[in-house]
Amino acid sequence: MITLLLCDQKALQKPMLYLSLYFKTHRQIYYELLNSIRLTGDWEAWLDFFADAVIVTANQAMETAQQLIALFKEDAARISGLGRAGPSALQVHRALLEHPIATSGWLVEKTGITPATVNKCLKLMERLGIVREHTAQKRNRIFSYVRYVEIMNLGTELPDI
Image (cartoon, rainbow, N blue to C red; front, top):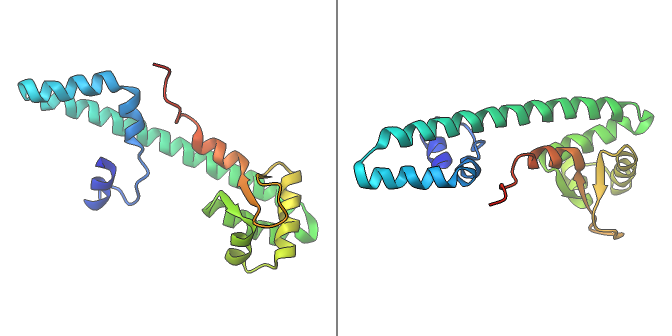
């Protein structure tokens, strides 16, 4: 909710801060500080905690963005080496950056490439370890940009309590 308010107030352009995970990770302190506001009106401690959450979360978002940029460049270089299929595979790759989990049909629609070419590109990218097929079907197959999804999931696990 706070992130959306920051977007509404133009403090953030997009909701890229996942503050809820920070609050869940530091749940005990979070509740103690909220209770302190209720009992004594101690907003300063809460604001310090919130500022720390924004700093930590913003740094994590920046690190994630840097990892995704490096991944994109690395994979684009590998895809470029595919010969004649390279340009089409790069279009599919760019579409997967927008939706790292996608159906082959969506990729056809997004790229304007024929279904046969998209499927060929996906097979080549699967051999390179860039994408993974999840459905084992002939139609309506779902693919994921494996390392992209892994990077986005890093650090989102809640600690054992």
